[in-house]
Every structure is written in C-alpha cells, then in structure tokens.
Length: 128
Image 1 (cartoon, rainbow, N blue to C red):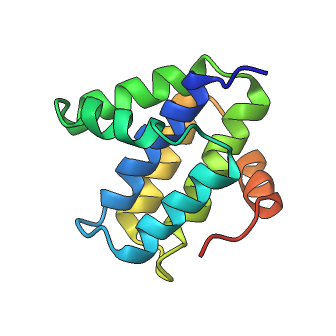
Image 2: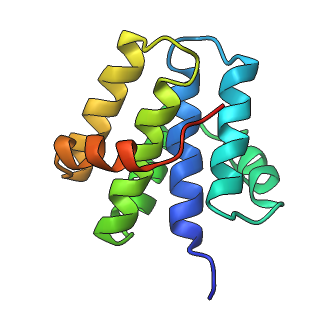
C-alpha cells in the first residue's frame, strides 16, 4: 500500500507548529516527533523533505498547508492526526496554553469534534 503523503506531511506541519508554539523546542518534543514518524511508518526521508520545504515558509503558510493536507484525508486519518497533536502537546510534561489554543483552533478549523480527538489520543501509544 502506498503511503498517504497528505497525512504524513499534514501531521508534520501541524506537529511542527505545536512543538514550537511555546517558543521552545526541547529534546523530549523532538524524541516524541521521531516516535510519531516511527509509529506511522513514515518514509525515512520525509522529515528531511519536510524541513527543506518548511524552511521557506512562514508560520501561517505552514498552518494553511497542514490544515489543507489533513482536510484532504479520511475522517479516520484526521482524528489520528489531531490525536497525535494532542499527545505531543503533552509530551514535555507541560501543556502550554498556546499549544492548547492552537490545537483547539486547528480542530475547529478542520471541522472535527474535539471529543473524537480526545478519544483517538487515548487510543494512541504514549510518546517518550
């Protein structure tokens, strides 16, 4: 089965924004990102391609591209993507207000029920 690049890149775009929302990207958040890449079976080059692509984009462009890609995914993939966002917002041991505001805004923008996201997050494996 072919990987869905929309899901992979959509998750990476939005995770990038969550982990940088508080202004600090720590090693724990990077380990959590690596765990998501591994759990989802993303291609080993996808993160490199993602970094190259986003280096030329501002925050608004990254957000719009991430939401666009996720909105083109199946409802199951959408819930899973936002479940990962919720998990990674908790990965550094603190849930920052900016991360939660971003998550709530993104879920609303994508038209997904927040309770579905919470349920999906509870079904995903814990992040390091």
